[in-house]
Length: 108
Image (cartoon, rainbow, N blue to C red; front, side, top):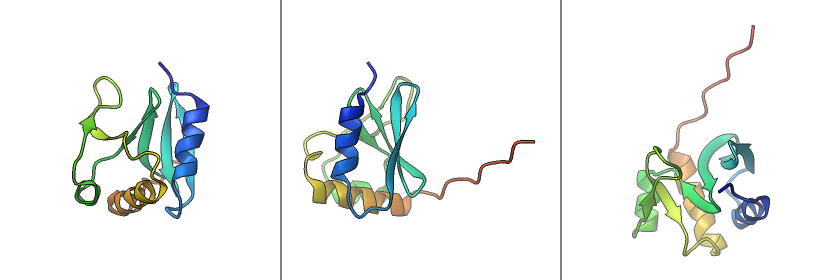
């Protein structure tokens, strides 16, 4: 089941002061970015954040699940998705630890 735009918009509205937050449609689901750095996926109307040491320390009690079949487990955000401050801080600490996006190769 693909995610709907309404849920994606809700997720984007929940995240504040963590850079420019955008979403791109990918194979019926969505990648979520902060200043061009992917940090989360929205799959089946669920939010999955890439696991980091800082994110794990911030969350404490972590629920991990793969966003889609065959994927590595990510942090599944369910109970606190409506807590703007908590979610925004999780995104900030996680994004700081993630590597910068690789520069795109120019097409010949």
